[in-house]
Image (cartoon, rainbow, N blue to C red; front, side, top):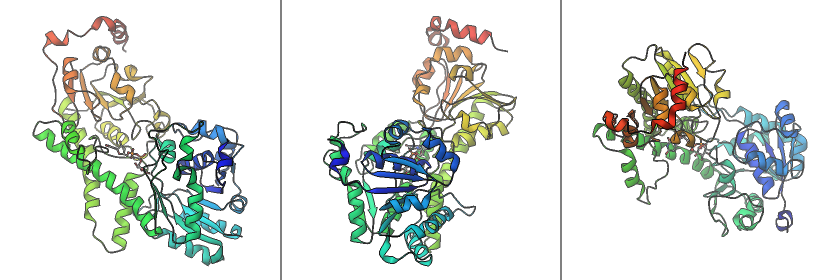
Length: 490
Ligand code: UDX
């Protein structure tokens, strides 16, 4: 039986067709609801109407194609979308303001614009990441602009979507948090999420496959709106804390010559701690963690609480990038006029997003010290071309091997799976110096040493090439092709 007959369909409007809005719109249509997605950007809406997808996200293409023109429409007409809806998701941008707080002007403008269309009871749902107490500001703004109290409630339903797995994070969540202060709004949100709450979605033959069997239903948490807003900010702060904590530990590991991977495995095996988000590296980035942690700090400041721990998390993150650069200097002595191969620009694998990417910060610093860079990333190069324009000192490569030709060092900055399976013999032949500085711990020091590399990674012992005897044990015959490539160098 098709799902629309199994569940109560709820008409939904999603305001904002950015990353969060598009994923929410596609997934709510997937659950069987009638969804209209609105944006002020006419070009973007035209693109979406004509079958285009403005962002790179695993599975989003297919889900939009499945529902576009059926249960999912795109429009610039906010009033029409709001009139049609019983639940309105606000998924507009909440960028960082120059002083560190979240800039909520797009939220305010969307709320004011929808007032005249609030002609019957509707629930407004905050989906964008907003600071605690925002729901109260939204309600106040609605009242000040003539909306009748009986016609709305404001609910907080934070998203916990990771880029690269946002579709399955939405459909197979660890938990759904709904912060609502009235029973009528709680009831409507339960209807909306019913297929996930009762597990019926997971029994559908045409479901999107996910990482877990949730046929018993998801963990559904109802709280006050203030608590839900706080849960979102505190969750991201806690995850950033885990990353900064293991990065701080990685620095200790380097000083006592031990391996952070072993230490993280030992720590993470304690179920009270958990093994996830304990991967040491070059620090966290992306559109959420850096901005959210600053905004959370500003909230604490505004209510008079000294939450210094948040500042330490940020400081460790910054220091991790500086420390990584030091490794490159240690390996190469001076960076002036060196040729550095860069693998990875995205803030993590599985995305083309370069916002607050530690990789970009590191590349800029390398350039500032006088090196030339040859860069490869399987998804994010297009997004970088304005920020780091191609020229004498910056080249974009065709692939990993093209990037390393003649390089004095290879620097790995994003953990794309394909970067962990490189043909090391070919790499060795193509590079000028066999030096690899790995910011994501993709290789074992022993393997790199056996392959003839000077290998620096994060929180693990430095390794040198084994004696010539072993280095030459590598099967260079496979790499005749690489030798030819190297000979062809300018
Ligand atoms: C994050 C949250 O996970 C998500 O719940 C929220 O809704 C949005 O912000 P995202 O920004 O997509 O999602 O990335 P995430 O996978 O959480 O990684 C964030 C950063 O931390 C990345 O730069 C990543 O490389 C880094 N990281 C993560 C580590 O360095 N080590 C880890 O162990 C985990």
